[in-house]
Length: 284
Image: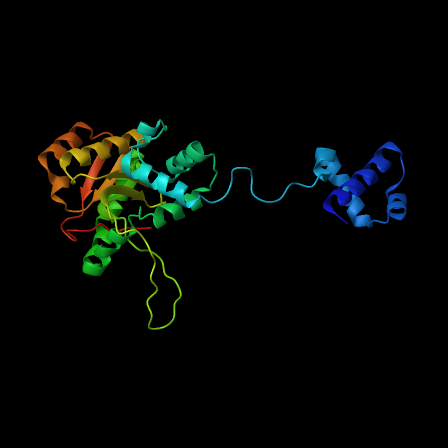
């Protein structure tokens, strides 16, 4: 029996009981259905009408699904070359939500936030690699900082209603390879691709809850770039921001410090330099 035929049987049974007044026991005998099915159908109708008996269409929603190769390349290039505001999106920085909206606006394709996250990781937009180095370099010192200094920052953030972000900067290469594939032992698989390469840089922050915000730029990392990122971060945040950064000279520059002093009610930066000069830890 097809889905359509099953739907017709359910409707006929319910209408016979409701409109013709036959009993449920008689409906079981006449239509050859089980008593439990009749009880379930009648309960469904009482809860939402006959529409509850209509089978829902299965499969992906219209416009749903994965991006095609050229669509993924277009979105990746837009993220690298533009800010959300330049694309008339209501965001100051790139996040999973803003990328999701960009995909919908550009191609009318609806993807989940988790899928957007997988795309970003595949395209190389992730702060995870530079973040992990701190533990490899000085695990005891990092743990001591997390046990002694971080609780003070966390307590202060709670008092002020601030959100803690862990910031870092990194470089991206177009030929960066992520993931693995199976191959014959002793024979490294070869993936064909263009010989043209490009690189860009990214400043990003991530919260303990996994909320990622990032800004891509092709020029050098300077005080002006850092200030632009900080400006966009506070413009996008609904609460004050506590940003923990590493010991990069740009973070300690006079221009950045002066800007932070002017916006101290909106954002505060905490330096992790004494322990790990090139990296920032994460804490869950």
